[in-house]
Structure formats: C-alpha cells, structure tokens
Length: 286
Image: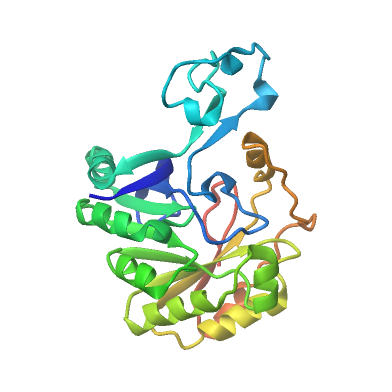
C-alpha cells in the first residue's frame, strides 16, 4: 500500500467539477509559477506555517517539547493557544485517504471529489490506489507537466479533467514557471488521442499570461482538438500574496495593477466553447 501527502481537504467547491465538490489538495508540484496561488502545495514535504500577523508573542511555540511529531521542525506544533502554528502536509496511506473521502458519502452524492494541488500527478501511483477505492465521481485539476506514464493512466481514471495551459511561448514558460511546456503539450495531445474529454483552464495573470497574443496562440493550439469540452479563462486572485508570508516566503511576482485581460472571443472565433470564471463566486460569463 502506498502513502502520499495532502495539505488540505475542503468542502463546498463550486468550480472543481459537476455539483458540489470535496477538494483534496496534494502536495508537490514540478512547476514553480511566480504567481502560484497555492505556494503551500509546491514542496512535497510537510512545512510549518505561522500566522505572524496575529501572533501575541507569547513564546510558547518556541519552548522545547518532547512531541515526536514536532521534533523535525524545531517548533512545538501544539503549544499555540490560538492555533496560529501548524503544518501544511499530512501523510496518508491510500486506504486512510480513501476512507476519509468516503466518510463524506452523504455530501459526495451531490457532486464528487476533486484532486488538486500542488500537482496530483506527482503522486500518481498513490492517487491511482485512492481513486480505485472511491466509488463517487472523481475529477482532477492538473498542470500536466509530468511524464506521460504518470499522467495518462491516472487521467483516464477520472470522470472530469481540468488541465492548466498557461503560456505557449517556451522561453516565457520557462521564465515564469521554471519548466518547459513541451511535456504539457504532449500530454494534452495524448488525452485528445485517447478520446478522453477534458477542460483547459488558462490562468490570466495581468502582464504575464493575459496578452492577446498568448490567448490567441492557445486558441490556435487547441483548434481542432476532438475531446476538448471547453476552455475556462480564470481571472487573477489578488489575495494570493498573504499565503506566502505564512510559510516565510516573499511574493515577488510583478503583476500588472489592472484586471485580467479576458478574450473569450479569440476562442469562440475558432469554434471553441469558452467561458470566463471571475472572482468572488461570480457565475461564469460568456
């Protein structure tokens, strides 16, 4: 039986598949996008978070403790009276995670479970074991930046797939995500060749990914794909930077100070169904 690392489980997801979703966030990602909205999911191992802005400086978390689970982190994870210190990341066996997911059975029958991250395909073998033990509808959100042998078998187990496609220009993709986009293109073509329906999601980061040129290049790449259900253009979340402070990291992305440039027309002109998903729970708009 395999084990994997999860950093959060959230109820009431609305845009992560059909119906109301339970979303399971797996740790670790092959990309390091400068605008990453889940920085606590980038590293595979558990890491300490601190709500410094709410800290009363009582010092209890820094008093040496004898808890075995605290020893690797040099801080007591149980001492804070306001629960402002803790871990992002919990290790599960596949049985344990499947049991926790299935315990939401009354909830899941109104939607299903979505695996997100981080990047769930980095823990592909573990997640395949979990998926086989969960009888409810399953979806996955993925950057697809992993070898096809890790990506495709897991993708084919899902009822719904959401694949990120951020930047078409390879040099720009390397600059802003740390990796080439060639494997992503190969995996999207493999999905399409397998006849597996999927949704492409494009995060529109002002001044980075939201140019007319980038959106038109993505539309050109996707034109003629047979299994593509639709494209979803995602506006930028301006509340992202505060997450970085919790794990002691600086948010350095140079985001243009304006709303995202949303060009659904560039996709619909090529016969691609396209919607824009906006912030604050707004309904999709065409």
